Image: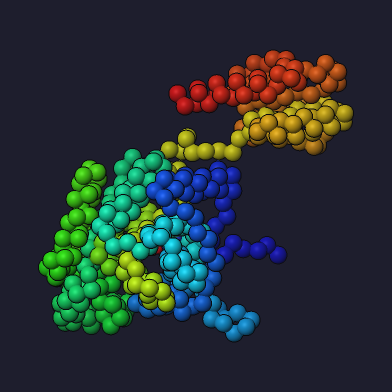
Length: 430
Ligand code: AMP
């Protein structure tokens, strides 16, 4: 029986797996320059953590959670996002007694029972940052700038930054009253989700993707008209900083984001390729005030964002398939008989200790077949080991791009490879 890949999941290997890994490394390195440190949290938590924090009105909680009862009768959910878990970890470990703000970055798989389509999986990975315990528009702006610059550094030529404010509590309370009044006469004709959102969190109707409902949403009251002076000023300060950095943005009145915990500034990053490929948001985030308190900690303002790595990866690949990294080797060992195989085996080990990426086959293949493997595996050099080479302590080193072969002694091997690989890198960069 052949087992099937589960709907909405994927396997990645070779260059895709490599590039996903590299994304994590690059984003981690960039986050570190902002003073973020890693945090690692469990893949599952008690279900209530998510229902309380992400919110009953969100699609995530109402329809998309992978929940189950464990053998001890506990109600468990595979994390559908990471922020709630990070907050729980901060409370569990009383991390808030440290100097604030706490700045953590994370990377891990999250699970949402969504309808799979391009750029939408049921298990996918998110890289994100959370800055907890600071109420400053500088911190919000810094987070937005981090995300924007990180995407440019990864290779996106430009990014569409959508931004909005959903105001402070008072602004939202006033706005919600106005929205309820506005939507009431239309509600009967709207989708079931909107009917539910009307009761649980009317703001979320603005996010409805149904074309019919969008027509109704288009004429809905705008948050701008309900903002308190403080919320207006706060938003403007964030925009001022973006202007200072010459970061372009679009103010999107309907951007409310899918999770209930946000307040004030919310934002998303989008990219549409030249071929019109649009996988939806590459990432998004916002400011939140009550989440830590909601999960049992002190009331601390925070801001965070998360990228979906599969979407980032797919679009980077579409942008520049050639530069997309492929697995490669520095050296492939080519041997002629049992004795040279053994010699090559130990020589490979020496070269690895010197930092080179080295592989070989342990099968008894003809030299031609071994060279073919070397080429398929993207090796820069082949090192040929035979009876004579062993006797002379000198090997044939063949550059597989230029086909130039030179004899190099054991003592000179590391320097030779170092120099020539450096040259190759240099050519590659040019
Ligand atoms: P969210 O927590 O919903 O704001 O998601 C943050 C980012 O995760 C999004 O901007 C996407 O890039 C990514 N993402 C969300 N849902 C999915 C999914 N089902 N499959 C792949 N990526 C996703």
